[in-house]
Length: 166
Image: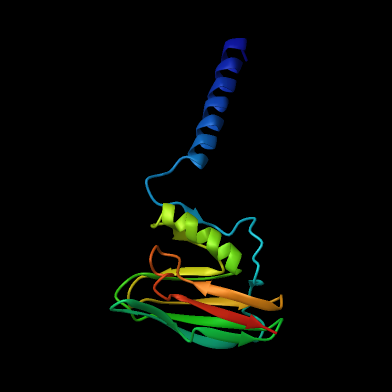
């Protein structure tokens, strides 16, 4: 192999590597997405479908001046797995994100800057009107946690609830 061919190959590899690195940091024309990678969840961890769980049906609704979850409070035992069956019966898209009050407050600020943010996290789902989804979650820590819709304006209109882990 000639020196010229070797340098051309190195240059091509360097350009490809730089392009790949840049593509990871620049928007692709759609809203940024969460992937759940390297994220420590305050309220526990994704559940194991092979282990027993309790099902909690949770409805998301919206109407004139109000947005709610029913129920808006869930009590669980530490170590318990809950399969949340989420139903958006409203006319708007809604989210369900389980986290600490502090983490949800930070995420809310990020959502205000990027309201079309997509979610692909084990602790959260975004549902379009009339959609259903499920989240299986194991609560490994005692405390009071929050579930919330962080789409701008929804939280302030009442789209939040608590999970008490004893």
